[in-house]
Image 1: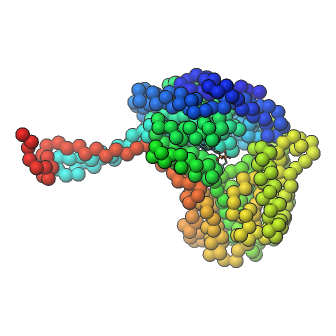
Image 2: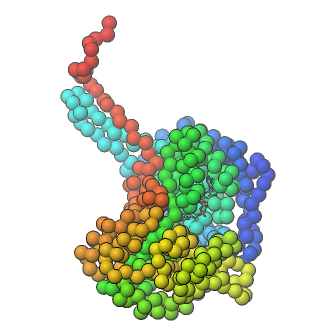
Image 3: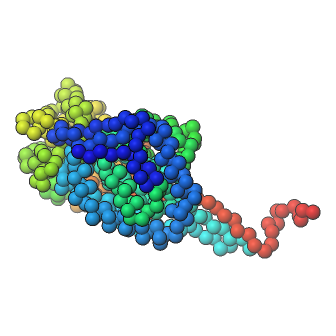
Length: 493
Ligand code: NAD
């Protein structure tokens, strides 16, 4: 069991309320961590530390090359601590240790990429706006950033935000999920160890309604970068109004996974399976709606059902485990309610559809990989984010119908499509209303490629140069030399 306080100004900081949060493993039921339950006073202390570090430097005034060097040292320390970080992530999330390691490795790669950007932050110059006048479009750090993080990929989502904010010269106060705060606290410590000055990365743990809301509302915070559910995203927008704060929102999704008859069917099968069941289906960009050509649907589903039998579900600590538990018991109840509700709406439960039981399963929150067939667009399970291992299946007869079905959602994060016809691939990719389109692949990502949503999946982008620019403000400087503008009235006496 690990016991953590907040991490503020480069040191541990006990919660002012003295209240604590117990985190039990969602897979085994064992107590794995105790976190501080932060309140508005703790947030105030952290914002002051970040504010001072930003306003007085040195971080915000360091050269890009120096920021880059320190970020690279941070990435290397992440890799040096890979085993421990992955263990914490696996314990708190209930995710297989194999994938927890990949998350940390992936996060370190992102930090390396952001380090490169730190040395390459630049604006635009217009050498002659008029004779004797130069225009400088500057990119300046946004200031103090509040970074709010969900529980499904705690360390990885930390790396979506913090290294880019740091590369831009910002300082941050991170509010991780109350269920999975361990890696954010460990990463903040490693950033300090790498030489990133105290006060640049602060972590306040606690509940969203208390610590999270206090962070969003705080007048000392210049912008909020939020990842979480659409429902909470709305609250964050609302809370930011009073201080007219900038927000970027990475919210929920309901991704389509479109399989055309001309696809490489083996690839499409593997992709469909991974796309919906990875991390027990707790992925914002999961391909939870299988939209498939009617001509191949029955054969495809039969093979999918067979493949589900090969998924090893169980102890996250076991190297062989493919799928761990859900995040907590309420998530299990929520998933079960969607599946049971679908049956009442005339949907066929083609595979799974129940809680797993017996042995270890009785101690944790394990749900069987589930396929719901004959799902019409009116069924709740097809429209709402379930955030569990549930695939809905809808058949189409034409490419137009496939696109219409995929776009019939209030979300717009990521969609995948499987086809070997280049014309079709380009046409469908252009027609899909989402921030990301995967062609013959799924749940793919690279630090260079911007990630983010449209519609109720939010706005703003992470990764890529766009991910750096999110954390900057633009300043236009009109630099005049020589003659004054002809519109001036004359020389003042
Ligand atoms: P959540 O919205 O319940 O919580 C997210 C974070 O917000 C947590 O740290 C929580 O404590 C905090 N929070 C809660 N109420 C708050 C409030 N009133 N003010 C400020 N902060 C508050 O989401 P979750 O259950 O942790 O994560 C799952 C959700 O996250 C899913 O909807 C998923 O799709 C989404 N998600 C999106 C992305 C993306 O990049 N678009 C990535 C991962 C997860």
